[in-house]
Length: 610
Image 1: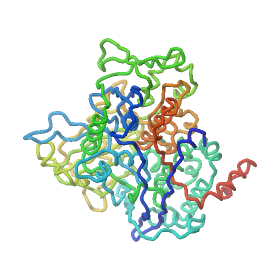
Image 2: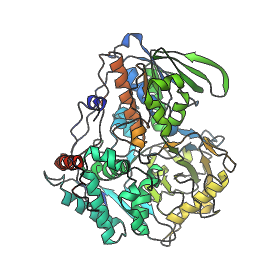
Image 3: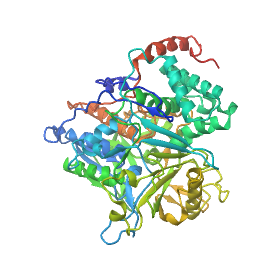
Image 4: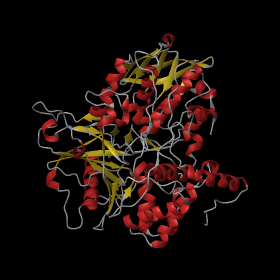
């Protein structure tokens, strides 16, 4: 743990425990026995004015808005500079132009659906502090829980259903042993998959290796090992490869299992999302899978903007950051212009927080700034990829499942969710479009470089119309089976894709809103929120955080770390932002200490039998 990491982790909550069980029909279940505490933050009335200190926040996505929120509550004068004419970054929703009639709102579109796993705790704390009339817990009360995950199989193969059911009995002291964990993992694999018994047993053993590995082994050995190799997917059945390799990486975080870091996949997707998220360390009594009860901007971003404006935050929209100017060991200003060009100008502040996505942030770091801190140069090695969605507007309510859909066999790694079923504060046909659409099926393509099933072309090589047809075909292949036709062509009224994706079908397709991916070695190139430049700080899901995954939680956590670093640099007496870290059950600590000794001696993990 770095010094910065340790300092920001003070006051870490002691999480409750949850039991990880399987319920009838093949279920992952958990119970909640305690609630996560709210972070203490100064109110607007009580906030010290920070002696008139000004902060320029570059970027109005989740990390930028999170930084602005924390700073404004501590009395800083904050100005946010945002490229688009709206806030929220990839998390926002957007109107589909020309679709609203007779007083209805336009149909809602988005970059791709989003969800809020129960192990998120930093972001939910911020959501509680965004007021919404009638909601005791602000925006947080706009979250709704999914009750089932559908792993849809193609070509008529039986689907895999994972109901998420909560039980009420927490594990007794000492329950969380390697044998107990192995039994729980095997029971889930047995009920929820069709893996050969020896492959399920091997995967359970590999998870035990990771669960009991010390931090040093994770950050060295497992960070350098691809998930595909760690679970030996190349030696296993196609079922094993699809369900435990591809399905846990490409479909969820747009990273190929063949190159994805075992540290990231094992620690976040397997441990936090699927294991410890149900045993402990959840956001209060949260379920594992949550979504919003309305389009994202309506349910979250718009109230957030109103809250920030009430705290005095100013927004300069339609503005492109050109260069962060570094002179005399400090940032002296930022050159900006209108998004569509025009004359450049320089904006100044006392402190600067770069909250742009990494592919845009690093383009603003000039030679002088890069020379001041080598971590800027290392960011050039960070990789991004496409993970973009399409919204289908349907004539008939078509929820498919009360949760997310993962089309395991789809060549484009398709995931989706029927959204209107969760929008209990909206009537879709009454409130949106021309009254004909009753549902919105939001689907995401995570694999853009493999041939599809209709045209034999990669998604990048297709036109938008071909992508829509291909995506619809892959969705139907996954969910229309067992004698049921869930998705019907005649129900499809229209579709929408984020305009950030351009040039499809041409020689140079572009996507301005890409996603950080996590191939092996990524950890070593991720920067800290604090830089060697005393008035310049980094926030964004590429910044090194405890959650270690390109997520809204990571974006929020990085903003908290950036603000804490800024407060330290400013000598501020304001209370530091609270940082929640991923839960790790105390029962694992003795095993990790044993592994630390074995690692220093050059020995494998106790459970690593090859």
